[in-house]
Amino acid sequence: MSLYIPIILGTARNGRRSEHIARHVLAFAKTLEIETELLDVRDFPQSFTQSPNPKMLEWKDKAQRADGFVVVTPEYNHGYPGELKMFIDHVYKECNRKPIGFCGVSDGVLGGARGIEQLRLVSIEFQMIPIRTAVYFRSVMDLLDENNQLKDIDNWNGRLGQLFDELLWYARVLKAERIEWNATRGTKA
Image (cartoon, rainbow, N blue to C red; front, side, top):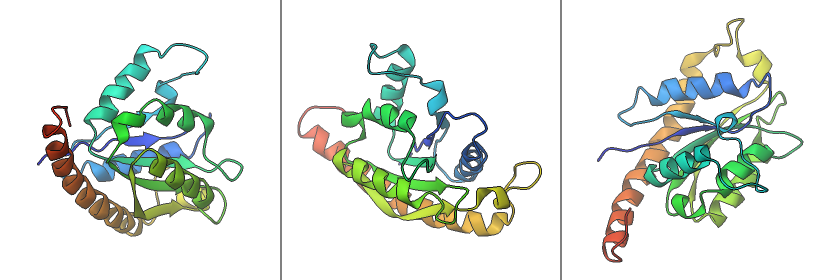
């Protein structure tokens, strides 16, 4: 059973260090037997004061097709970015019954844990399954070398391996159940 698991970069801020982490997570995901891509909130600008733009409709299609998600997001002021909130608020129905994993990024010692905890609550409201395993990239300035590549890659890939092992287990099980659930109701998975 093939799986599509996009990696979501949750901030549009200039100078974002989380972009380097998201690109590493994407590279790791590409070593697995899944389809993946990076979805950057910067590429999907939206305000609720306007009609959805065509890019947001593209996001809805990708969210519908997805079998799960991995969000890479920084923590800003003990929370997650507003752009990420607007991004996910457009895809409630498309996210139902799908697993979601998290990678937090922070200059501080908690690695974005407070923002991730808020996202866990939001994902439950979206009828998603937030997995237990998360990866917290704390003190991110110390984790990247002069080329913005992660130091100690084996350590981080080990942690990402644990996250993806759990996420993909849920993705396979839930995909099969969504297909059966929708077949009995005459809808698409």
